[in-house]
Length: 244
Image (cartoon, rainbow, N blue to C red; front, top):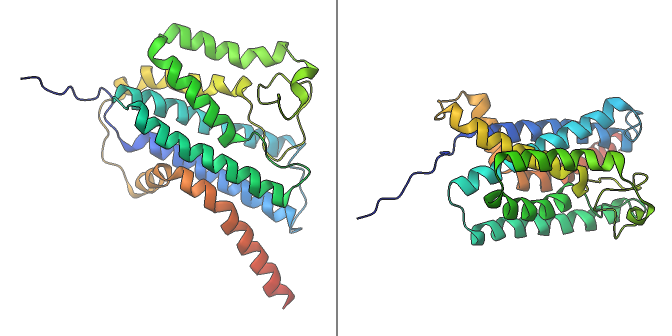
């Protein structure tokens, strides 16, 4: 009689807590953006390094977690049907983000933001992980990160081609996460998970803060979709109350 082999990376709350931390950081960043958008204070979110670097770090942390999550899911034997169900949720939410941003920012709506990028990159990662070893994954990650530094062409500057990332200038949009260089961060997350998680051992009991972050991380997509409407609605209600 055969016995099921337990997954090499039993699920714990550490990765979810890291994703939850990214969600908290993102919420603070977006709330600051909303405050300046509605005139509560002035800030340059498009040119000030204090804000642009935060945005890059938040996206990097998200994609690292996504890459780690895919490596863990494959190690636990996740099949394609479950993958496609989750992918459909991500892709559907990406479409809603495009529609919502077009309503608010018709001249700079999001055509290929973080969810659009993740939807495409998750397919590439899912296909490549079972076929590539650690060395190949790491080399590919470095190549993705470095290629846009040395290769740019006007062909990639249109809305139909800028998803690749080899643009000569950043497009006018509220969010832009092309395949290059960001696939490199997702690949790096997969490499990190393969190397790190077996060395950490089983999850230890966590305190209330980490449990809260882990809970938030497990519901990251739902939270991502509702947090801005709640923040913006709250600010609009506050403005209406003040004027009344």
